[in-house]
Length: 102
Image (cartoon, rainbow, N blue to C red; front, side, top):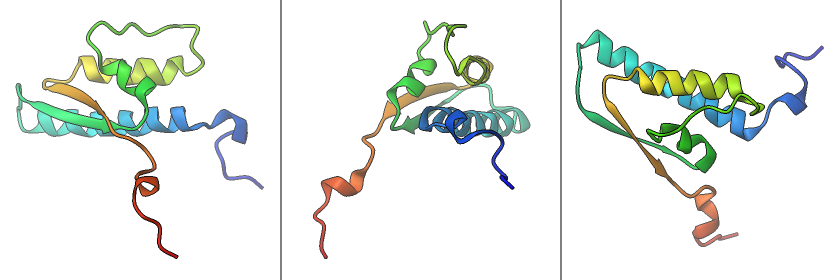
């Protein structure tokens, strides 16, 4: 019996990044609305450039994209945020850049 929500091929790192960013932006917006925050900015970091492009002001979701539902969800939450969300790319797998000791 599988406890996964769908076949393993339906889950990929891009969708996971989108889901995580949806959660982060949703939480940020809830905190802002609860505290009547109407201005300010926050840096959102991620190691996936495709996910971060959704934060660009001129971004338009593409209905032919396979993750269109998640992209639209994140895009809507970004647009409805009362603060400015600044995307920043961070390199992944930082452990590869440090000396490895056995």
